[in-house]
Length: 373
Image 1: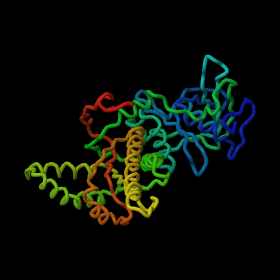
Image 2: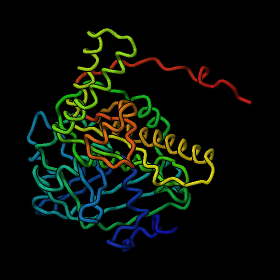
Image 3: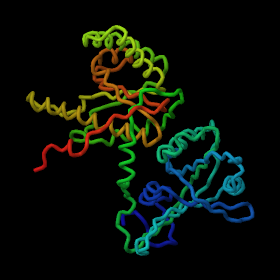
Image 4: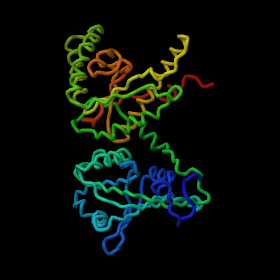
């Protein structure tokens, strides 16, 4: 089955580092597993866990967050004490069906350790579990250790009636609807920082957007420095003021809107600037096709931004979409020292909402479909 799942339940998989790609995909896509540990005397303990798969030094690993425990010390948990005494652990992930021909499971064996705050992998492990489980977004996990399982090997089994390619699981309709409808445009942010791996994973998701000929004619600039964000806000302010004046708005209203926009750029801990990169598009001898090619590039940038926003929201992070760079691209380029080949098209402030934004009503599907032939 091309390395998806082995049908011999006793045969360990020995591909690469001991983990078949299909087994890893199966584990990555499931939501719950059961972690088996044992104390020094060999007494076992099994608990359900939420987990995430990530790479550590180029090898697959499994991260398990330790939840906040308001009534106890998380470090006193049986599984934590067991790991400290005996690091060999197993994680079982399965699909159950009343039709037993459709059963499937993957058994992961490895060595577990506690990654303490301040260690190199701690932030990456937290970012991985938060990207998978939105519920972790607002838990205070930064001062708690994370369980990291490394040196993985897998054993797996697929029932005779299970669907070939079971590792390629698609999210359900309910999960997709929750993600799409839950995303919101946030304008007020708290000072809580956003971990770099969260930003990197969101930009990686943007990279999967459709694009003309698969060229991905866009790049992303990340601005985290407070000084840089302040300089950018101040540099764009003059253009905003001029445009609002041309709209005939009163001076007091202009001042208020400028202050709010400036505050958004300064308070959001991270700014992402999606840029069109036309060096990657095809070149045609006629103007019409060249214009169409560039229009397709702009369309695909919008798709990439949507992927970015959804990925951030799935990780429990909020964002907005500001179009200001469209009106002063040269100022953005000059302030940030960007190449002329990078055409700034948007500003995406990223952080954690200071307050729930006001949601605007959406058109019904009957309004959106204007013709069906």
